[in-house]
Length: 192
Image (tube, rainbow, N blue to C red; front, top):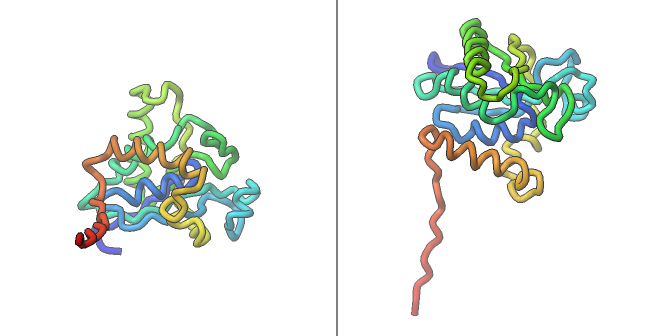
């Protein structure tokens, strides 16, 4: 990692939604779906989903601090999920879907607590934020199937019904922070 790069790990329900949004932001070098915060020696999708490992579904971000700040990342994070729901996001229920910020430095911890206090004071959610702020622990990368899930499975019903609407709202809200999209241009067929 360069001197301008930091890591932060976020839990906001299903990791597919969080990963898909953050991959679009300028300054995000990587967004890896995985597991953190549990007590089991190994985290796999199966044992995390059972609720027995204690891990949360997370996305570990590596970001360039000259392009995006940790504060901006947290501001985006709190728009991507309902931080007032304890151990759930919508129909996803269990401790693996809890809201959490796993900080990688004392500065990130203080910032996370400040941002939560500010949001609570603003009544953004009209309820108290239940997001855990915890020191990072062992990170287990999610299985290959879970990486870039939305990009690879955008046509599935879950992606269409749950992720696509969240991403549309996200893109409207943060349009100035999005990476440019490279569009492929179809060649024009010769006429005649």
